[in-house]
Each structure stands twice: as structure tokens, then as C-alpha cells.
Amino acid sequence: MIEIDGKNIYFPIKHIPRDQQLSALEFIKRSLNCGAKNIILNLGTGVGKTMINAVMITNYYRNFINTNDDVKFDILTNSKVLQNQYIKEFDFISNYKGRNNYYCDRFSCDCSIGKELHTALKTSCNECPYDIAKNKWIHSEIGLTNFHMFSTLSLFQKDILKNRNSNVLIVDEGHLFEDVFSSYLNVVISAKILKNCGFNLKEIETLDDRFISKIKYLDKYLEFLERKLMPMIENKLANFEASIKTSTSKKRIEVGKYIQNLETKLLSFKQLFSSYANDPNNIVLDIEMDKNDKMYSGTKLIGQHIWIHDILNEMVFKNYDHVFFTSATILSKDVFCAVNGLDSKLTSYYEIDTPFKKENRPVYYMKIGKMNINSKEETFQKQIPWINKILEKYKNKKGIIHCTTYEIADWVKDNIQNTRLLFHDTENRDEILEKHLQSTEPTVIVSPSMSGGIDLRGSLAEFSIILKIPFPSLGSKKIVARKQTNKDFYTNATISELLQMYGRTIRSETDRSDTFILDSNFSDLLKYNSDKIPKYFTEAIKVLKI
Ligand code: SF4
Image (cartoon, rainbow, N blue to C red; front, side):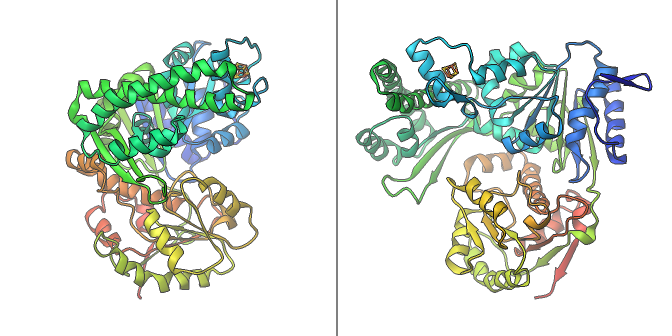
């Protein structure tokens, strides 16, 4: 720790803060002094929120708000990639990931399975790499973890968070936190999931045929979980635990994985039953179909909460003295507070536009047709020649095509023959992204799920094409119910996702990337929501005559 102008620098500041970072800090000071508990910082790409989160908030807080030596900060990010970026830049932060990221030497597997085997076989072990990382994180001043790990801790391993007893929560990519947390409360059942839980083919076939593919309503789903699946899972769990001692080491690892998946399922059932008992109107059943599942019906049943603001408050926010959210796309304080269950009176909101020049990030809007449910196939046919022209114009450059859905990604695959295009499915997304990042060829990723969390700076993408405005799907009962109870939520979610797509290829002051929007629904979005769309985005739009 060093001292500058009578203030302690607990956590090293490597760069001189930019003016925008200093003005964000000024806002933080004012807010905390006025009694705000929650602070939302909507900072355009390029402002440098990582440094604000890791050193500016923390140093200020230690000097002025809580001067005790035992004050602790929890920083959350949305992915392991972002976690690694933090650790690379700020080595004083203690990093903590899920068990499957640590290697268990004793059983030659990851620690998530190792832990199950360890418990079932009642062995002793003093040098577990997962436990070492966990204990270091529990006692660290600044602890970092990802949304997924944090959700698991908050829901199923509360003792670890209680033990850490942190004062301040800093949520990076704050616009996504509620969605990720919510997904941990979902109870998803499909043939594939049963397979991963160790059910045999005959059992899966029977369950899929008699229940999973037949259930249409929530009451039947809950009845199926409680009366049929839960006893089967409990039985299976007992059998696996009993069999593990006599299994070969290879089989043990497989059984360990099944035990872990079965235990997680049971915990999620219990949470869903309890939420349903509290407020039955807040639970819905969504049904999705996986057309790639050739063995079974492909039905996926998803029991989920419509809103989780009460759960978030009870399980997360109430445990901290102050909570900070940073993001480039939290567009409305009111909507964000409503979705996350924050008291608006105790929450302050600040925004700074991106400092990147608009000349470097033009948005070309081409009114080709509307990608609505009934017109999208026809519109896509009209988009094809334009996609080909754009690919030709940037023939030596890398890029990305945002499709919004796998259906549209498949249309691109079927209709545009170009060896530069890289497609992925739900299983190989990261692998294909890595291929794009490593390739020296002008590859173009075609994706329905890369609107956020990836960094395509510099030559990694110099153009992007948005085929469909990313309205959340109204095929989901959850989204419909959310839209009915909070109309602004729907519009905000759409604009936020669109801005995330736009932001993938503009990552630094020197970046230059052209964005093309080919869906005429963009006109309505602009017309009816001019107050919600940031100026830095609208000022970059150029309408192209076609
Ligand atoms: S406690 Fe030991 S046996 Fe268990 S996962 Fe960790 S290293 Fe492996």
C-alpha cells in the first residue's frame, strides 16, 4: 500500500485515469455521500469500466466509506474469458471458478467429479486445488468470480458466501446478471438431460414417450417432477452412490458426473416447488423443440420464473452494504430497478456515451423488408443478394453475421455458399469462435448467440451484418408475461441486445468497423423509441438506398 496526497492506494492504479473515469468516480462519491445503496453506471464501450471496478471504486471506498481493514469486495463478470482479463490486468484480485476448472490428481478428473468420488468413497485429501482457490477467495480483499459460479453459491452453497461476508458487490456486465441468475432457477428436462443424469436408454425412451413429449401444462409438469421423476432420481442417486466403491476408475468418473447432475436437479426441483407454493402465478412452463435430436422427441420442458426480483433481493443484494452495476447497455434506471428488485429511491444512475468517433463506426441501414414471423422467409430471400454483396465488398476482411435465431443461421447456411462462413451449434460455439480468432483467413462467423461477451477488436471483425432486430421471442410464455406486466422491459431488452451486437466489433479508439442492419423493423424501433436509444448510436446511422 502506498500513499498519495494523504490518501492510501490499497490497490495499484496502473494508468492515469481518463477524464470520463474521473467523472464516473465523482458521481460515485456524490451518490454514496447522499445515501445511495445501489449505483448503476452505464458506461459506453471504451470508457474503461474494468479499471473503475477494480481500482477506482475499491480505493475510494477503502479511504472514505469503510476504512476497516476487513472490508471486502466481490466483483462478478459474465464469463471465464472476462475473469481472465481482470486477472491479467489486476493481479492482486483473487479469482474463483467452478469446480470443473480445477484438476483432481487423485482421481485424474476435474474437481467437480473428484469431489463426488471423494465423498462417496470417504477418502481424505488435504491438497485440493479447488479448495485452495476457494479459501484464498473467501479471505481475499477483492474476490472475483463469474455469474454462473455466483448464482450456484447464492442458491445452493450459501455457507461459502456467508463465510466470505463481503461488504460491496460490483457487477460487471450488469445488464445480464438477472438473466443468468434466473436460468439457474429453471428446471429443464429433456431426453438429453436425462442421459447426462445416468438414465438408461429404455428409461429415457419411456419417459420421453409417455411424459416429456406429452406434457403441455405447468400443473402436469410439476406433478410429473414430484410424483414420477423425483422418486426415480432419488433411487438412482442411492444406487450410484452404492455402486461407486466397486466401479473401475474409468466408470467412477462417469458415475461421479451422474451423481453431481442428479443432485443439482433435486436442488432445482425443490427451489421450483417452493417458488410455486409462494406465488403460483410467477411460474410458467415453456416448451422448446430440438430438431437435431434424432433419437427422441427433441422436446425440452422448461419450468421457470417470470420475475425473480424478490429472490434476487433476498438471496443477493440484501447481503451487501453497497451494490454497483456497470454495463454499456443499461438504458433505463426504472426498468433495471424493476427487473432486479432495486429500490429506486436508494439507487442512482449515471451514463457516459462511448468516446469512439462516429466516423469509425457507421451503421448502414438497408430497408430490405421486415423480418416478422409471417414475412421473414420472404424478406430473407431479398437479403441474400445483399449479404453476398457485403461479403464481396469485405472479401479480405473478417466479420460477423448476427442471425438472432438458429433458424435464420440455417437459412444462411443453405442459401449462401461461401467457404469463409463459419457456423456453429449449441455444442461447438466456443470452438468455432476460437477457429475464427486463430485463422489468418478472412473468416466470417454466422451466429445467433454472439451478441455479447466476445471481443472482435481490430482485424478480428471489420464489418458486421444484423439480419434481424433482436426482439425477445414471443414464443416464450415467460417473455409474453414479462411484456404484459412491464412493456418497457421488452423494448429495452431489444435495444440493449442490438447495441451489444453493434459493440462487438468496435473495441478501441483505433477500431474501424461497418455495421449493416437489413431488417426494416429497425424503422419502427427508431420511430417509437427515440428517447430510449443512445445518441451515440443514432448519430452513426446512415440510410442506404437500395
Ligand atoms: S478434495 Fe482431493 S480428491 Fe476431492 S476433488 Fe479435491 S483433489 Fe480431488
